[in-house]
Length: 408
Image 1: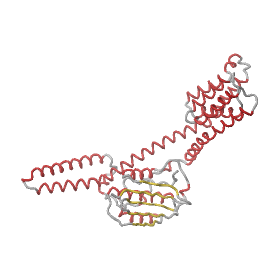
Image 2: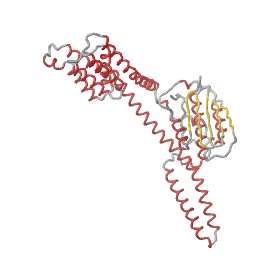
Image 3: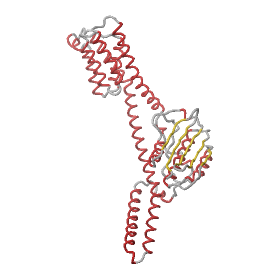
Image 4: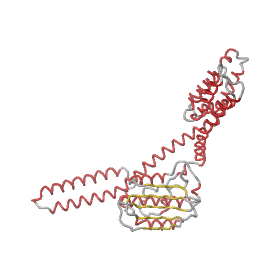
């Protein structure tokens, strides 16, 4: 599980280390997800494991009751039916209607011929009705109420409305309890599922936004290379004589196709631009990390920069992504680890570039469900170049991000 100290994505306009670092840390992060939501998500995952543990325990319990308790008959059928009812609890969260209706229908159908033990089967019945009350839609829940009342003596209630039998009374009480439970618990659970879907949508939107930002930034890199190709092809074409007409035609085609590609690229990226002034801002590289570290230090987070290996020029896209990853990781530490110290390690290796950003803050001990959008952006950049990324809290305190990018 990732820490709550997850990096955030800087605003699209921050594309140079000369921009004030305080503008970076104003970007949106995962604070919109309330602590209550995070706690509820952890409780939900724990409850799913509880069902997987509870079901086999109840199966063992009911089988022991069939063997040891008197009044159970016929024992083979009681063991089979009781085991199935208890085992069904493992699926009640994924299929609450099937488990709820199936449990009640089975108990009603076998009651005349099979005498089941009361302990484990009663617990399984209560749990199945809880699933039917809380985790189903309004129509399914209404049908469940009618079915529970009908199955537990509904005919007696119709025949003797003034003096219904114990079964009918029990069915009405069970239906009333189901309604109360749905009002008390079901609303909160449905809101939790809605919040989970909203979180998934927000995560997908974060991926789209980060891809747009990467496209905007890489436009300058690609455009520079294509422009160089076009200029060189045009210059070479003008220097050729009339006796090299075929070569001139090939170079002319290269120049014409290159200019067309640049035009189409500008049209495509223009739709992604949020600020036209971005075209005038140079993209940062690994050489700008030292200035970024200085700005972060002045903003309140002491940072050490360690560089190992032989620094060399890498593909511009790799250097841009590496800078952004370091920027977002330090921004995260600045926001969520007050009073901490951070270290940035840049390791140049023959075939890869390794980045490690770690801090010794205490915020890393607070887990959250899901992930901040900054980590989503980092992973998008790493995945684009076929690299690897690991992020998480450190022991005993702190948070670390380790990234490996191919250097060729």
